[in-house]
Length: 90
Image (cartoon, rainbow, N blue to C red; front, side, top):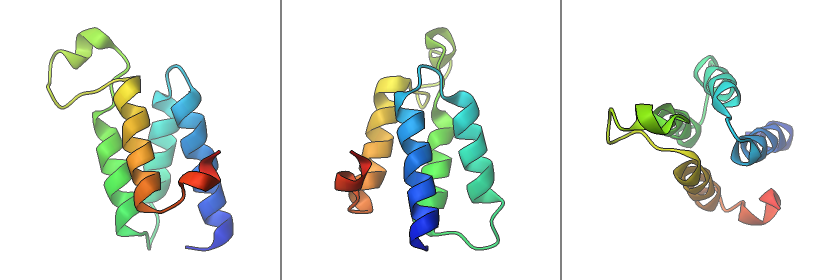
């Protein structure tokens, strides 16, 4: 992955982490990752992990795999840690 694409991804993830309801941004991010001809496995995993984000607490009760904003930040931070990019996210 080139540096420009990496910066774009980090920018989007930062916006997702800091938005009250990032559902639209998550969908756009997922579509971008899944529609690429070539993508890193780690990005595909993140896109899949983001599938379980649900902003509505009542809807989260329907499935134990659903999570809210707090865990969303953890999921993204875990990804950044795996990419060794925690210092670039600041």
